[in-house]
Image 1 (cartoon, one colour):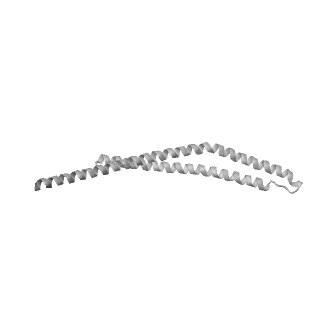
Image 2 (cartoon, one colour):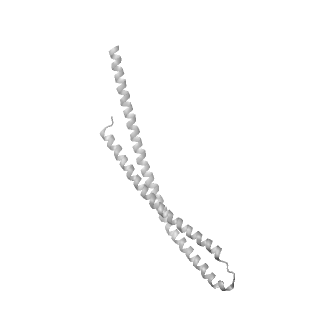
Image 3 (tube, helix red, strand yellow):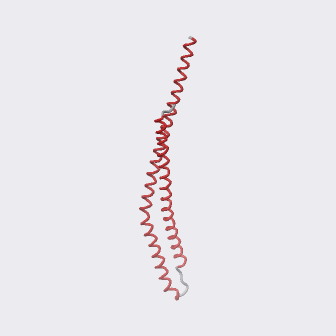
Length: 144
């Protein structure tokens, strides 16, 4: 029979594990949002570069003045996107590190809880085996 203290410890570990799980989920969502922003920036940059390579040809001289402005405009937007991505990269790295730490801490609580649970099962099995041994000895002494 598990002691009240053992049950309290197991409940406390379950609570801590659940709290860490919630924190991990929140951090994963935050990291996912930052990654999504990075992906959007990269997709926008790729689309602009494809547009630049596909639309940078002119057929006549009348389009030449517009082509230079078009290319400068696309390049400026690509540079802006690159700068935004460069600013976002450290934030993403910090968020990923926080996520790794939260996962590690959550796993620690899970391992502790499972270890305590296994120890309690072993102790219960030992107590039951001891009780069986005692009953067997009592029967043996009665017949002997």
